[in-house]
Length: 261
Image (tube, rainbow, N blue to C red; front, top):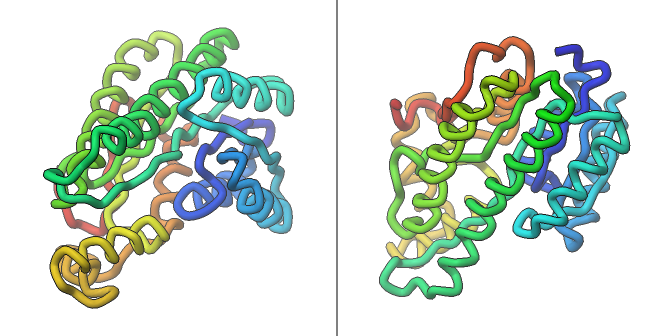
């Protein structure tokens, strides 16, 4: 893929892993559509600015991945900006840390809506555009280490990431004939605000001080450190490039050696 004229969408890219992915794809030469919720537009503009300051191209956009019309409008924005869509990274997601026994139906439905329905709508809208173009493309979803190894207090979150694995495999099977590869990335413990929340909630449940819960889980990391968004972005860079043309239907772990698939 010639990234010089490539258009890449990254949802949930106002901060954290999504921001790291958007910045890396911008450095790779893609024109990045930096997309996040209307309430996250300050972060979106920050991501756009860092990409442009590094010599890349970026355009900010609003999206609610749980809303089909919003996701379709995002794809339309990408096409308006660059005439086509080459890469779609369905990164947006949420985590809820709660004992399963206390989990409300409303919270369960919310996490399913964002983490599964949002990925489904993103995959579908991206695929429709790529099929119409007729020149293939790269669709990439956000899974997690918990798609292979659930964590306590993250049961519904774990279930959604297992589902992303299944959806990714099914989509890869259906769209390979169109030259579209569909893969997912599975981060382990990452130094982001989401893991700060997980650390806080796990600490409350287990009577641990701030930072101790992550430290406890991080003891399983063979490479000896918690990951940073750049670690994940490196993998997504590969999955977005022609170097990954013969890889599809995979959920690839980037966890420092916590879990072997």
